[in-house]
Image 1 (cartoon, rainbow, N blue to C red):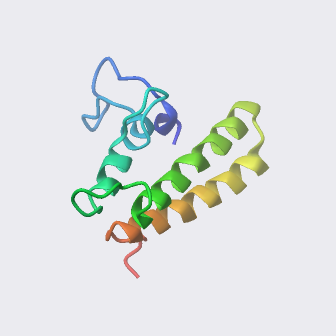
Image 2: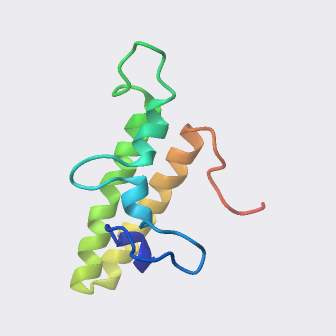
Amino acid sequence: WVNFFIQFQRREPDSVGRTYAAQADLVGTKDGGGCGLLFSATFAKPGKPSENIPQVKKFLALAKTFDDMKAAGKKGDTARAKVAWTKSSVALSDWLVEVEMPGSLTDA
């Protein structure tokens, strides 16, 4: 999970070939971007704004949960990090279901 919060492009690919950090790819940076918002917006009807569709709302809720986890990690507060992790996990599952993907990675 440490690699998730790296917000800069890697100089060299990691062991599985990734050249960008996961959070920057999913959520974007302070300058904007992020494939999660772009993917969520594709569910909007052509010509209609995407800000009010459920997929975008769920994604924006998910993106906000990472700040608490990052802050807890910087302070070394494991209890707070665990709570933030749980909130992020639930928000990720909710978003995945909303964008018609499996909300759980379990085989059950």
